[in-house]
Image 1: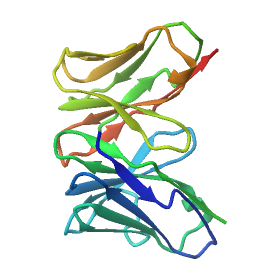
Image 2: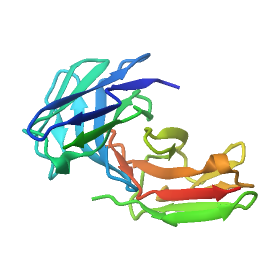
Image 3: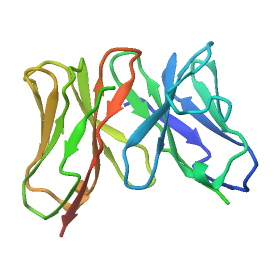
Image 4: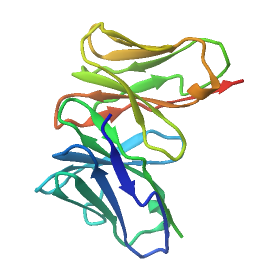
Length: 114
Length: 111
């Protein structure tokens, strides 16, 4: 199957700092990528849809100024958590749309904000 | 808002037993996908079902899509400890290619 990578796999930062997470489709081009967050023992919650070359579409309740998304190429989308706080600690997962009714997920990034 | 309800939420069984996980919605989906996720990792796609009434088998796993494309089930035969994980169903409504995820079923298979 298609491969999606995320970097870093885990990050620990101090409250008030910004953290950037990268999502790459390694062997296919993805015009659309999605960002999810997942709390322990819960399902995935869609945060935003990232379209190459255009602004991201955010789900209701997700602050677009706090979670900055950039999709500058067909293989790379980035999520920047600005001024992170402990409540932003979570597991962030991206997925890339192959364009044929299938999304492949990255391995996730564990963010811990102290 | 489309909702996908999964049941049961938690399931702990002995090795060798059979089990079924259900995924139900009042909405129609153009396709439905099943994923398995292990702690600290992203979900891994198991299968995609597209046609109402479709049945797909993947070794000891059998997936069924309801005739009306509103529900699905996952049946595991002779469960093994390696089947332990979080099973997620996700429906694709076709709109903006977004997936709606079910609440998940945490399966533990005891040796």
